[in-house]
Length: 252
Ligand SMILES: N[C@@H](CCC(=O)N[C@@H](CS)C(=O)NCC(=O)O)C(=O)O
Image (cartoon, rainbow, N blue to C red; front, side, top):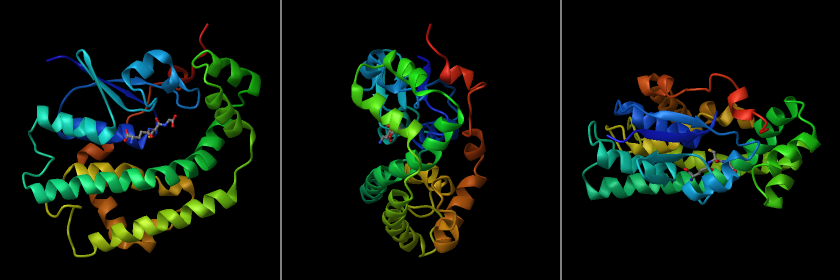
C-alpha cells in the first residue's frame, strides 16, 4: 500500500479528525507538521496539494485529499473495517448534516481561537514584527496573510468579538444538546461514526476560547465528550511534534 502522509498542525481539531479516523482503523500514517502561525499552509507547493491553504491534507501515493470529513470518508471507503459510515441512507444523510453543522460553526469558532489562543501563542514567542514579516514573506507573497499575522502578533485580545462569537456558539451547542438529550450514545444512535469524529475535536476546544462552562451548561454535550475521551483513539490522537522547533524553523 502507498504510504499515507498527513499534513497537520499542532492543536488542529481538523487534523485530529483524520488522526482519530486512521487510529480507529489501525492504519499507520506519517505526519508532516505545519506552522499555521508562520503560514506554512500558504506556501505555493502546499497550495498545489490543497488550494484552500489549510490543514489537514492527506497524501496517498500520487493523490492529495483535503477537507477533513472528505478525507475521512475516503479512508472509510478504502478501509471499511471497522465501519465508521452507516449503511442506511437516512443515517448517512444525518452524518453529512452533522458534518455541515460543524462547518457552519467552524467560522465563528476560528475567529475566537485567533483572538484567544492564537494571539497568546504568537505573542508569547517574542517574535518581532520584522522577524514575522521575514518568515511569512519567505512562504507567501499574498499581503493579506502577512497583515493577518501581524494583527495577531500586535493587537490586544478583542473581548467584544470573543463575546459575540460565544453567543453564536452557545446557540449551536444548544442544538447539539437537544439532539443528544434523547439518551443516544453517539450522534447517530448506538454506533460511533464519522459524525462523532467531525464534532468531537472542536467541541473539546471550548475552554481554549474561554467558554469553560459549556459542558455544564449543556450536560448531554459534556457526557458525549466524556464518552469520546474514553475511546483509545482519543488519547492516541493527541499527537504533538517532538519539538516546536520543527514547526517554527526559520528558512535560511
Ligand atoms: N473544513 C476544513 C477546515 C480546515 C481548517 O480550517 N483548518 C485550520 C486548522 S483546524 C487551518 O488550517 N487554519 C489555518 C488558516 O486558516 O490559515 C477541514 O475540515 O479540513
